[in-house]
Image 1: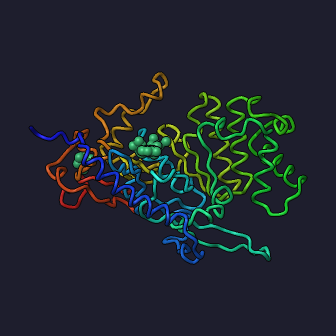
Image 2 (image 1 turned 30 degrees about the horizontal axis):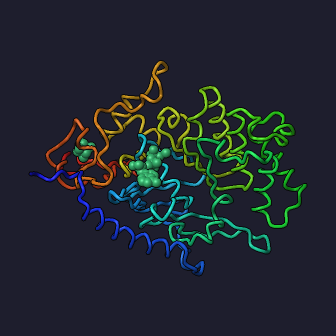
Length: 385
Ligand SMILES: Nc1ncnc2c1ncn2[C@@H]1O[C@H](COP(=O)(O)OP(=O)(O)O)[C@@H](O)[C@H]1O
Ligand code: SF4
Ligand SMILES: [Mg+2]
C-alpha cells in the first residue's frame, strides 16, 4: 500500500521529537547565554534603513514536524517610511514581527537563523546621542530591554488583552516613563503621559488618565495603546492588525493618527494587515508574503499599478468592494500547502493559473524588475523574456 505522506508512524514521531528536543535545547541555551555586547553589534548594509531583516528563519518545533513559519525572509524598513506587510492569514506576518520583538514563545518557537539588524540610538551618560546597530536575532534575552519598548514598540490587535484591568490608564502610562527614563519623578511621568494622550487625539486626557481600561470604548483603548507605545519615544512602531477589531469609522481615525505620528516621532512604521485597502492608503513600500516567504516587494505604486506575481495579481482582483465583507478578501481558489511538508517548487504552484513547465523545478529566486521592485516568480526570469 502506498504511504500517505501526511501519516506518521509512532517510530517517526519519536524520531522527530528526539531531534526537535536537541535543537530546541541548543537554541534555548543560546538565547539565555551571557555575552558581551560586541557579540551582537553589527553594521547596517544601507544606512538609510532603520531595520534590515536578512534571510530570517523562525520555526516551530511541533510533534508533527518543523513548521517553517518564516522561511528565509529578507526585507528592509527605511528611516521615516511606512512599510506595509500583506498576505493572507497564516503566511507568517505576525511571526516575522514577533521575531523582531523577540516575542516568539520558546522552547517550541525559535529564531533558527538569520539576521535582524536594527539601527538604535541611545543617550550616553554625558547626554550625547550614539548610534548602535544591533543584530536582534543574536541578542541574549537579558539584553532585549535595550530595544523592546523604547526603540521598537508594538501595537497589538486587541488592546484589552494588553492593558492591565486593575490599574488606571495613568498608572500604566506613567510606568512606561519610569521604566525608560532612569530617575524620572512622578510629576515628570504624568506630564509625559498627558502629552501622549493629547498627541493621540484624546479630548479629555484628565478623565482618561484616571479611568480603568474597561471604562473606555474600543477605539479609545486603541488610542491609549498607541500613547503607551509612543511614551518611550520609539524609532520603529510595529502595528500588527491594530485596527482590524475596530469598526470602519474608528479604524479610519486610528489610521489617520498613525499617519500623523510617523512624522511627529520622526520614525518608521511596520504596518501589518491582511487588508490591501489599508496598505494602499498608508504604505510607502509594500512587502507581499506567501507561506512564510516574501514573494514580491516594491513601492506602493509598483505593487498597486504593476503587480507581477500571480498571487499579488490575484489579491488585487479579490480586493473588497464596499459591499463585501473584509473576510472575503482572499478568494484565490485553493489552499496554502501544509507548512510542515513544503514542496521544493514554488509554493503557489497548485493555485497558479500562469504556471510554466519550469515551475515544477526549483523554488524561484528573487528577480529584480526595478531598483525597488522584486518578484519571486519564474515568469520574469531572463530566459522567459
Ligand atoms: N505557536 C505556534 N506553534 C505552531 N505553529 C505556529 C505557532 N504560531 C504560529 N504558527 C504557524 O506559523 C504560521 C504563520 O503564522 P502567523 O505569523 O501568525 O500568520 P499571520 O500572517 O496570519 O500573522 C502559521 O502556519 C501558523 O500556524
Ligand atoms: S513561479 Fe510559476 S507557479 Fe510560481 S507563481 Fe510564478 S508562474 Fe506561478
Ligand atoms: Mg497575524
